[in-house]
Image (cartoon, rainbow, N blue to C red; front, side, top):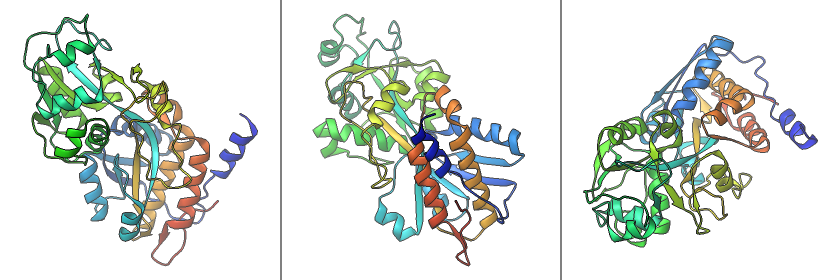
Amino acid sequence: MNLRLRLAAVAATVAFTGVAVAQEVTGAGATFPAPLYAKWASDYHKATGVKINYQSVGSGAGIRQIDGKTVDFGASDMPLKDDELAKKNQIQFPMVIGGVVPIINVRGIAPGQLRLNGQVLGDIFLGKITKWNDPALKALNPTLPLPDTAIAPVRRADGSGTTFIFTNYLSKVNPEWKAKVGEGTAVNWPTGAGGKGNEGVAAFVGRLPNSIGYVEYAYVKQNKMTYAMMQNAAGQYVSPDDSTFKAAAAGADWTKSYYQILTNQPGAQSWPITGATFILMHKVQDKPAQAAAALKFFDWAYKNGDKTAEELDYVPMPPAVKAQVARLWAAEIKDAAGKPLTGQ
């Protein structure tokens, strides 16, 4: 470990001395990081005995639940703008980076064989391209045996940060999509059937012939799904993996704000539908023991969870960002009397 990384690791050391810590924590939100959070929670319980109950209900529901203070932390793949956080008296911080990936179920096409660009992908979900052998798809895939069958689009039925990342990307690369549909955790879809959560979309596409959907990459790996290559902003066709997600995230400036959008980034290796996933917490904690326990878990995940994240093809946050987040906890998260829950 070089000196800069050692200094960052030291700076990220979080002290919880003198703070009561609960033995059970509840969180809810994004399905995008749910496979990782489940593994982290299992490992953390074995290591500490503290139970982390995470409900994979979608980013929209996670935001509503943290706003209503029915959970100790919320999780969203759509970052909230700084002024919105200020109004709610909340903070957000990134945990990991991952990729949203188009998945298909078309007989005779193997993972990584189909090539798509943003214009064509948007036109499919606009309902303009309705057949797999449409000339626009054949032009991108001249040697693939694309069938003369109807495309069955599958999208999220619930409020979803994965949908935000997907629709934010389409809004950048397909002008008609931007004009007619736009971006958000929930949009007025022109076509397609809905699945609940990344889990629901993966299951739907898995059993529906000639379908296309979008899920976080961990679900592609878990379910051995057929993914498409995407053309990125540099004009290169790339496959989804941790290296292309890392390339997309390389230009993010986390020192300015945690409101960072990582879609359609420059770079020959960048995966174009990349995003971070975030934790939301209140600055003033009515249940300080619960908040302290949640922060202790996130601190543990930052220090001990990178290997697990990489195994699931998420990209860990850089050490300097982790140190910066630890300073944010110490400065901003306090009990009702104004006492910090962590120190450095």
